[in-house]
Image 1 (cartoon, protein in one colour):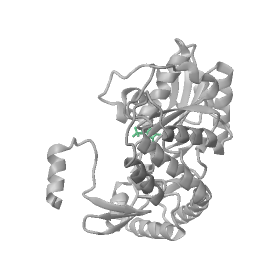
Image 2 (cartoon, rainbow, N blue to C red):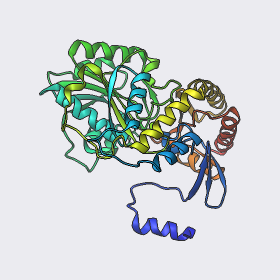
Image 3 (cartoon, protein in one colour):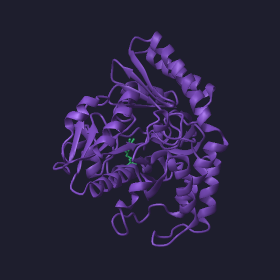
Image 4 (cartoon, rainbow, N blue to C red):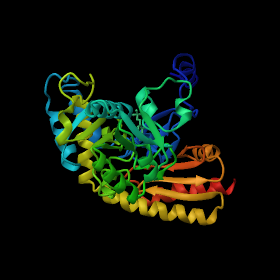
Length: 391
Ligand SMILES: *Cc1c(COP(=O)(O)O)cnc(C)c1O
């Protein structure tokens, strides 16, 4: 297809639900991407937090190739070795739990919401937070504490109350006899990289224990090494009752997962929840390769070090450019709050060959691959400095 034909096909045949840059990508390797003109880009936001191992990690590619030639799909009323291995591995690296497999972050959260309602036996209210993001399906959207995503889709499923983030009193005040769960991201991603305070999370655990509430961590974005530990909750020493995962888990392939504390997993029995594609052989094999590579290549240590370096450099930039209000985040999940809209900065970085993101209007977001090098960080931030110079 010629370049114009590609743009035309999108224009005529693809639903226009995304704001797009006029770039056509054809190849990726590690933190680099190539467009159709063979121009190379440094990807400082690979796959919106999906490609935590960089693009086309050789072990993931190999796993997919192998499994695709053997058995691509088998439904969930039979057994296959890859799902068994992956579930075992996920439970081993997290907390005593059982896994439900689905295909995306929204689906994982949807599963958590349904699980909570079944568990509640009449209690159904879930407390969520302002500026949270839990996905685009109706219940996940209702759980999302941002009006801009919800507007026009009312009536939303009821039973969600969004209160102020990092405010334990607000949670206490929102409790009722109908409350069954509290759901949060430990670092709010789409909401502008807002980090949960340790006291707050510890307080939530205590509050949930005292009131028989489920504590749900949405680790769709923070999970799989993003914050320097395999799961973000490990920074807090607080174990949730339910954890949801997606983005980084499949190395670029679609997967979602809900992990539920072992004692309560029987809440859902046969026929109560399902996903046709969930946990298929190819995706499980890919996810296994991701988890293996993280251990083998010491990517958590690397992400911690790279994260420290990144924040050092971001704070240097902050000292230099008054337009930067704050650098915040954890590990390799970093946000730079600007005093102006970030859109122009993203566009100018793009022109100069560096892909970054802006969320919440004025927060530049960087989530490079866990194996990003110092040199690549230097390069990305040099370009960013150049762009900020002109603002
Ligand atoms: C991206 C995201 C989701 C939604 O995931 P999808 O795979 O797009 O459905 C949910 N929660 C968080 C925290 C996310 O970052």
